[in-house]
Image (cartoon, rainbow, N blue to C red; front, side, top):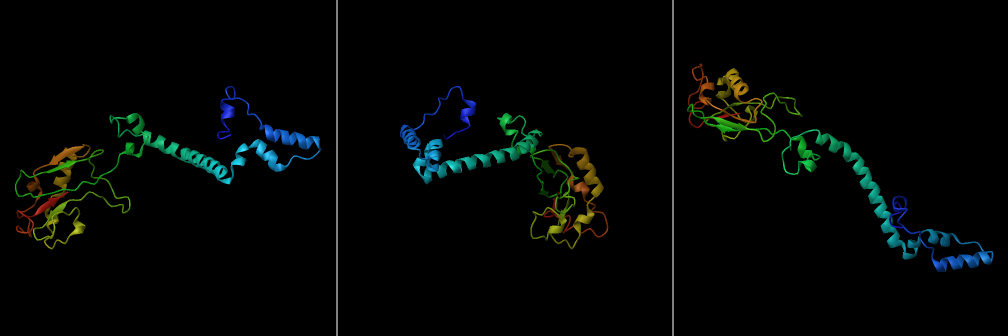
Length: 227
């Protein structure tokens, strides 16, 4: 009675349900006296759990509703699981046979940002992707603008943890003295397409000989280069 579908699956192993003796006797006497069987008795004969009251029967109704809801959720999530499993970001991870059907198997994009002084040629910026490979062509989903940016944070700046030129004021325009082509060439040669690399020779990217370059603000020991 609790799991009606079992009678279709285990029909050979389930015994036929016996009718309640008292109810059957009551119905037999009614027929003998040519009295119709009441609808309530007929319903109780089909579903004996009605004798247990509303609480028990409402519980069974809620269970059936939950089963239907979970079944619908399953139908929706199966295509998602198939999409997740088409990637291989978790390959090699323990339990991959099950984890491949989770959202983590698609991986993700992580924006990297680092700062470093550049006074000496030995200074460099190590770059590492937790997932995937390094790219300088990615654009923001909401803005459509490139997320790749680099620049110089001047000595007088309030903070040295900026990641874009739009985040701080730079009266000396230090970022204008960076050799853009040289930085992009170095990144494409040593970093793009790799999981990690180190951008070295930061001082060589500064065009300190150009007119207007402020050696104190832009080229001092407290100035920072970010990427």
